[in-house]
Image (cartoon, protein in one colour):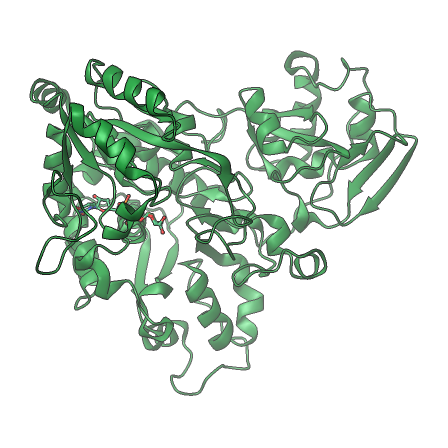
Length: 564
Ligand code: U2F
């Protein structure tokens, strides 16, 4: 069946259920964004023209909202607790619905069981029952519940599952045996899924798929209005919980900021003002989302204190014409040195509060400075007050961008069909260590024809040999490209090393998330034995990694030029 774009979201609001504060928050958001979704669908429909889109039957099981997992978020919605996850789930539901797919939504174990056809109260069902869904979107909590209650069906159908996973899961943590043997075991990893089945909030981990969320987009008139109405001396502090004001050394930089600007906050408080918030701060208390946006429209500066990490609010601030000022982390924060990331299945190093804002948006919208350096901080404040910026929202965070991306995933990502053997390309002399685009284009194009329907299409592959100690994630970025793990099989052969003119004295095949790689002393080439361990992340000074990179669309890093 062909999927048809939907323009009326009232049935979705019914599907979302009611009662919990979290669901109320999500439904309000969906209602408010309806016009934007509908307009975006019209634009995407025009862009896709006559492209056939399969209608899928989709189950969305939001595990963290179930009582069975403790539902710690719902009671905190009105108290300054995290809202980022709810923003994202609301937008995922809206996108799937607007794209025209068949949708079921569950937020309890009972509903999950009845939708899966598992008799409630019987615990797990030992037999495989046919799954009435092509796709299941869930989170780590939901995954655990499905494993417990689906019996053998879980194994059979796990390739249909997509796991919404804010901070991402790196391959080394995902592979059970490898994680256990090499110290990558955490509370969350070891599911042996294809790493692309994990979907993140920001495009920070190319081993996973980037799901994202949306921020409201302004039209030209609104943009002009906002630009005219800015108070150049008004700052809003990022964070709704009083705990962020406990940051050490904040007196110094807050004192400086207070010399130049009027400081506003949206910190939740019960009956009296939170003691952590200084008296010179004008605290509005936690605001409903639309009022928070209004505040951002007037402000010149949105300032982060270092926490929360990687949330939606800085994108909203920038979209409403604010400049986002944040602290650089040196040394970077990660699961090795910071409580918040500890136990998360990633070793990614976070160099600032919001790496996406820093790396994908940057100046003039985003300023990343050392808050311990008073001069640098003060100079930034002064410069920001006189810098004019337009409201800006990257395409991938618009409704159209999110629809486009999810559409592409749904139509092209297939983790159920086993991939064919990696093609063996012809030998051809190449410039040392680089598959230059011109010289190799033909070759990869031939390969592409050997794997019809491969996605992303293989002709977007550009291979690079990393310098010692550099991860593929960074190596690709160094060349203006993005690491594409699904291309690893094309590089995992002696032949690929040959083409790159890497002089292998010997070749070995082992399980190691850094392979394929070349170890210089000894001139040894290593191939990857376990496809689940292909990983863009990870480095070791011993190795020069062989990296599969690809191009990407401007403002839509998840998709290559030929990906739609
Ligand atoms: C992030 O979660 P947070 O909820 O702390 O993320 P924020 O960036 O603060 O934004 C969440 C939403 O809260 C809204 C705002 C954002 O869309 O419009 N809001 C509001 O409604 N009223 C206000 O007064 C202020 C903001 C992240 F998303 C999570 O994944 C992480 O777990 C968490 C911790 O790092 O940070």
